[in-house]
Length: 178
Image (tube, rainbow, N blue to C red):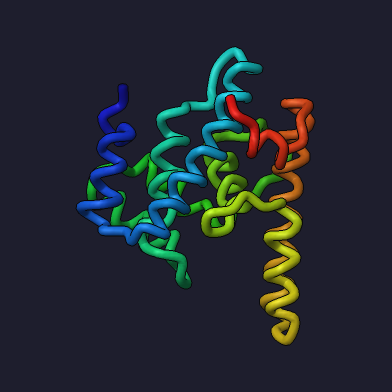
């Protein structure tokens, strides 16, 4: 057990007592966590080592402790660093935007990132839908559309890498009971 990664009970305490998330955001965090753990456990089963399930759990549960507004991932990361959870903060800070070339295996960071793309409020959705919907909403803002298309391309690379490694459709893996 790593003392710099909060266990499930400590994450629950942080969500409810420290960050005081409302019920709808708690439901969202729990669903993101379930999806991330399904992906992480499948990879752990296939690999000789990693990914680190405790880090996935904490990163997924705590990914939206600063809400869903602009720069929420940086605000959440700063708050978690202040509490001594720098490893988790690194995961949380990358859940909205990261670089992924596909040359390295998918890590905890990419697992939490993609889990947040598979969840909208209390629903599991497809990665493509998540971005296509946002792109349509932003159609009058060319810069935002370009940024969303870039992020979608990264998300699709992660999706492809996961599907190649697990030999499963990512959305099916996200809803699987395992």
